[in-house]
Image (cartoon, rainbow, N blue to C red; front, side, top):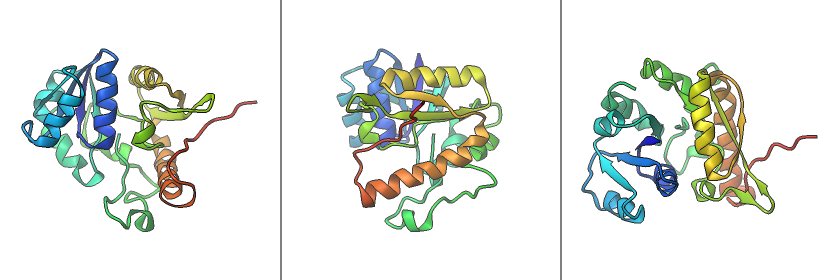
Length: 206
């Protein structure tokens, strides 16, 4: 699969390296392909990934992972041309300020409005990047919730999530992102406070 990863931070870098290692054709869409950060990321991918400008990365890919801070998401989409983000402020006060998008919409729904024609799927937001390539906790896999309005797009994202080792659960239409984004805030609240980051959410069935 040809995957463009817009953003080379913790989440984008981790998922991009993992998918490249699984045999997918990964290209990181970045503003500066010659930055030390990007060169290090490509080196860590052991020649299995490359970097390009955002529009070039998107143009040559079948799937696009949007892994940018919320405040940079719209600009990234606009630079991408035709076409997973949490709406929180990147600052030490993010837990106190909470979500920047209310409960009558979601970041994912807003992105779908900005990227007309894109098949938006919400995923990879309810656990820390440190667990994304090894979501096993004891004998169980953490649950990764996904949601979206296009069945084929969700099938593709489910495949990518399953490959990483998650138990992938379809949470329904894109509107369900209004529930998944607060769940991400709960993970961050616990990870940076009460219990530390070594945990994941799990659906337990009877």
